[in-house]
Amino acid sequence: MLSIKEVKAILRKYNIRPSKYLGQNFLIDQNVQGKIINALDIKRQDTVLEIGPGLGALTDEVCKWAGKVIAIEKDRRLCNFLLQNTSYANLDLFSEDILKYNFGKRRGLKVIGNLPYYITSPILTYLLDNRPSIESIFITVQKEFAQRLVAWPGTKDYSSISCFTQFYAEPEILFNIRRKCFYPVPGVESCFLRINIREKGLFLTNEDKLFKIIRTCFGKRRKTVLNSLSSNSAFGSKEAVEGRLKDIGIDPKRRPETLSIEEFVRINDGLPNPSA
Ligand code: SAM
Image (cartoon, rainbow, N blue to C red; front, side, top):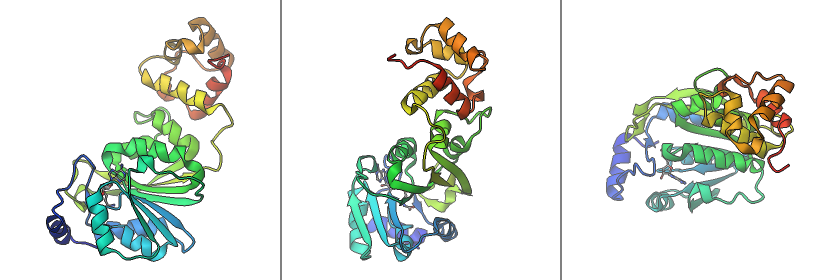
């Protein structure tokens, strides 16, 4: 893989100043590269979708093992570099925003990437929205974000993104990555995650309404579940919400961060549909 000297030389040669705006921190640590490639466990039949290949720190190795690699890089300058310096027959490189990528009828994708930190949450949400196309996701993200994804009820990191992710997938932190493994050195520590997509959501329920309830509750973290929900008239009057919560055995005075996904689903099933 490219050393820090080589990365700097390429950036100079192609007149590229790493863009903070695009979250450009390039992996320069061979040990971490090896750990990531091992974790991916790529098979010849795999189609891999790489988000933000940058200078190709992962792309080269992935192309050696996968049947097909689709790489989506927003920065045209980096795409040009990759086009001029890689020649893998199984690589399709697109200069595009991942948030506009059309997954179409693709199935079974392995999605990988050292993600740009500035849009980690929208990217993960977009991937989960397109989950029928995806089998698993392997990403490097900011450590705090990773901790939120795997957080359990009752912890300070537990939030609506924990619920959303755990409803549709099984996130697991595989290892930490130090800042100095990237150039330029980012301001935060990172974690590498595996997120296996569940075949079905965790529970059978009205998912749109469920996530509306979860967002409403976490939007007012310090309030009780009763006060959060009754601040949104769509869920009925305060008295009606209180009655429903008691009927389903949820103490109306509980704080949202103490509620498990299963309890949110019970609330969801117990409250009338907003349009009803
Ligand atoms: N994979 C490379 C590595 O590990 O060295 C680069 C990782 S860097 C943290 C993130 C990469 O994502 C950059 O190459 C950046 O240009 C690209 N990027 C940023 N926003 C993007 C977007 N919306 N869609 C696709 N790529 C994006």
